[in-house]
Each structure stands twice: as C-alpha cells, then as structure tokens.
Image 1: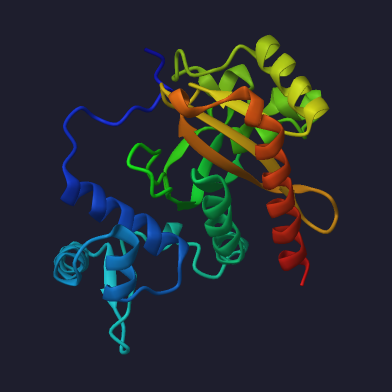
Image 2 (image 1 turned 90 degrees about the vertical axis):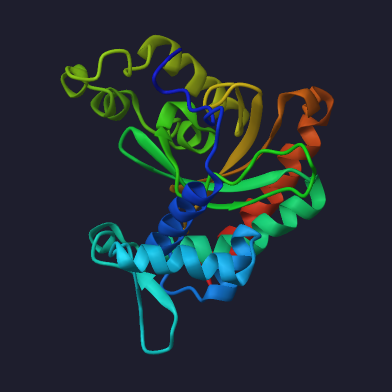
Length: 256
C-alpha cells in the first residue's frame, strides 16, 4: 500500500481521536468553550470537559480568564489563531453547512502548503454511511482534491520545484509520478473541477472546485466527499454547479 494513502485504523480509540480533533481545532481557532467542543464532537459536555482537562495537563491547551480554551504551549508555534487561514475557515463554515444541506454529503475546505494539503474545515453529512470529518488532517497535496486543484494552477517550473527529487531523498515512494500528475492537472485545469477517486482513502470519492481571492489566485479547495458506492457520475454536473455557486458566495464574503 502506498505510504500516502490514509485509511482509518481497524480499531479506533474514540477518546484519542477526539482529543486529537480538539488539538486541531485549537490550532485553527482563537478560543473554544466546553459547549462548543461538545457540539463539534457530538459528545456530552462532561466528556468534552475531561478531554480538555487532559489537554491542559499536557500543555496542548490552556484556559483563559473567560474559561474558554486556547492553544497551549505545545501547539502555539503552529497556531493559526489570527492568520488568513483562520479567517478563511470562519468564512467558509456557513457555506460548508449549506453544501451538506443541499447535497447531503460531507463538505470540506482544504489549503496547500508546498507538497502537502490540510483540511482546515469539515462539516459531516448526517447520513449513517458517510465520510467523517478530516479537519486538521494533513495529506500529500497530490492525494487531495483541494491539493490537486491548487497544484493545477502552477506552471511547469513551479510544479517541478515543489516535487524536486532532492526533497525526496529520504522519503522513498512518496514522490508522485510527475508525468502522470501533469496529465491529471491539465485535465483539472481544462474542466475547472477535480474528481478524486480513492487517492486519499479507499472507497471515497471527492469532487471539488477552487476558491479564489480578489486577484483570481486560488486560496483553497472546496469539496464534498462521499462513499464511492453512492457516487453517480450522472450527478456530477449538479454537484459541480452547486460547489461552484458555493465557492463564488464564499469568494464574495472574503472580498467583503
């Protein structure tokens, strides 16, 4: 199995997963209350409080005078509390929620840094069989819909710089086949959207479009993810149209 592929472990430890999700939330947001954490994780307030208490004990979080929780010393170097990423995430959440209402599939916002891409926001579908939240998770950019959309905007020299062989000397098997990747990116540029089947996780299909700033530069990828058994190619025009409308609305909010 390629190292880049991320599949959930056979036996998941819910408390560990929830603690890691809280840590990711704290990196991306200025402050969170116990109630907000409980609602986001879908757990009781008492459970959220215990998880936060452990994160405080291990310096992953700290509590301020208002009793809200913020990123702690262990995570503060990587925090994005006042960054463009935080602003982008806050603006995107209502649009992600509306996408879930319309398409009934999980919605995501993804940003790229070099050869990696990160989910900075996720809203889950309420269907029993669904793709879970990936918020905070980092993948190779060429494995994610949002990453592919932003890589497609690079010229050949920029793309080769991102995937320079020297950067992969100690990362055998992680460098993508550039010839194939260039063909895939050319198709994405031509279509204006990306369809991702099984690149990041087996059994998952994602469809996405770019989100651009006022200068027309891509700042993120907006996507929906679904179990492959539910993907119907005939529905692709409707999905792309809905995503494009949401992306334009988000761009308008960002410009304001």
